[in-house]
Structures are given as C-alpha cells and as structure tokens.
Image 1 (spheres, rainbow, N blue to C red):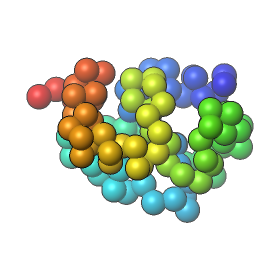
Image 2 (cartoon, rainbow, N blue to C red):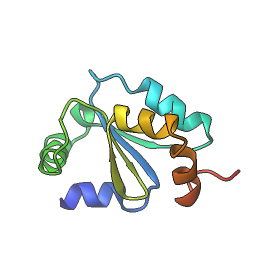
Image 3 (cartoon, rainbow, N blue to C red):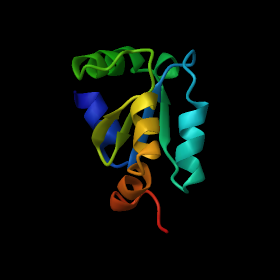
Image 4 (cartoon, rainbow, N blue to C red):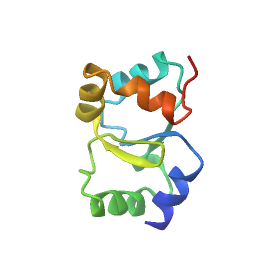
Length: 101
C-alpha cells in the first residue's frame, strides 16, 4: 500500500480510474461543490499496475472508479451518488476541508 498511501496522503479528494471508465459524472458532481479532486488514470500512470494491485487488496474492482475523501476509501461512483442523494456528500467534503461554504 506504499504507493497508494503516498498518492492519497496530501490530498483531500482523490479519484482512481482507468481511461476506459466513465468518471465524468462523479468528477463533475464533486467539482460542482467547489472541490478539486486529484485524478489518477491507472492505465496512463507509470505505477498504474502497482496501484491497481493495491486497490484490489482493499477490495476495489480495478476498472471501476474508486474515490477517497479525507484519506478514507469511500468506494466507487455508486457509493458517492448514494452519499449525495442521502445528503452526506457535502457535509463530508466540508468536514474534510475540500470545500468551504
């Protein structure tokens, strides 16, 4: 988990995906609240295969977008949309300092 930990360490919102995955809606949703996620595209990243193995070790599916907020694994796009629909996403982004309202 060395590389994964390093990539998430100093960033509040991090999205891991592949170029074949559709991340536009989740990234747009998060950006619309004023947060600016760091996005790593695994099949374009020099350590992409290692990162993918580390994500798999956490139980993530490799071709599904994976989101960390405040260094905590939130899950994929479905989990983020569910948080948003339940009214939990904005409070989490506020709590972690990703947005200021």
